[in-house]
Length: 239
Image (cartoon, rainbow, N blue to C red):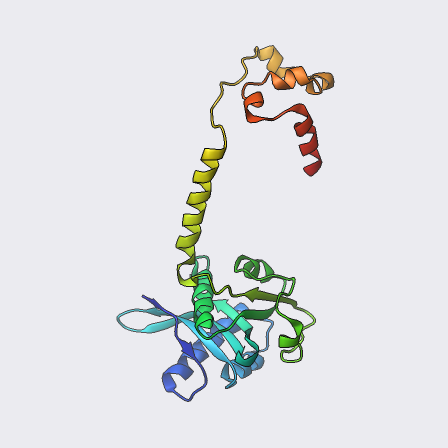
C-alpha cells in the first residue's frame, strides 16, 4: 500500500524519523548538494514535505517525497527538492507523487507551483505540466524566493477544473474519444501495394519521375486521401 502524508518539523518523533529518511534519499540523489543545506530546508518550520510511504506488515518505508515552502497568501508554493529512492525509480512513483501533490494544493486554494530546476530535471518537470515560460504574475513570487543562477525557473498552473487524482483515467478517455472522432472524419482503406518487377524495384527512380504528377497520382489511395504532388512538395519544407 502507498500513502502520501504531509509532514513538517512539528516535534513528533514519527514525523522527524520520516523527514530524516527523506533527507538521506535526497542527499543520495543530489550528491552535489550540501547535506547541511538539505537538512536545513527540510527541518525549517516554514517548509513542509509530502512523502511517499510504502506500507507493509512490518514497517512504513519512505521511498521519496517533495519538499516545498507554501506562500498561501500569494497562492503559490516553491518546490525545493523532489526525489525518489534509486531502487524505486522508473515505476511511476514520481508522477503519482506529483498528481497527489497537485490535488492536495488544489484543496488549499494554491494556483501555482514554482521551482528552480537543474538541467537534468527540466525534462521531468515539463512532463508534469511545468513550463520554462513563467505564467505566474511576477509580483506574486519576485522577492519571496531565492534566485539560483545555475537553475531554470519553471512554474505550473493548477487548473481548478482538472481532477489530478484521476488524471490518468481522464487522459485515457480523451485519447479514446479523439481516436473515435478521427475514424469518423477520415476515409480508411488499405490499398494493395504497387506490383513492380524485381528489376524495377532495384532501379533508382529518375528525378523527373518523382516530379511527375501522373506518376504520383497513380499510386493507389493517393487521390482518395486528398493528397497531391503540390502538398507533397510543401510537406518537404517541414523536415
